[in-house]
Image (tube, rainbow, N blue to C red; front, side, top):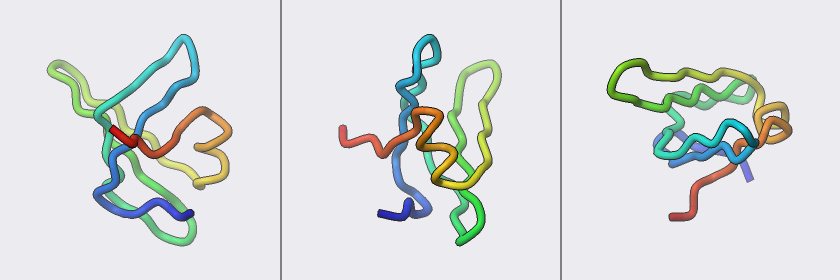
Length: 61
């Protein structure tokens, strides 16, 4: 299933576990995910298949 703008995401690839992230842009070519944090936000951009290989998935909570 293709990820959509506004969808909540998480990364479960130890040692990096990120929650509370959002898809802020989605196209046929790339996905942009932002993980807000108090001091520095994390931005990840890539193709969905590569992001899935890195441990990204839809957050069902």
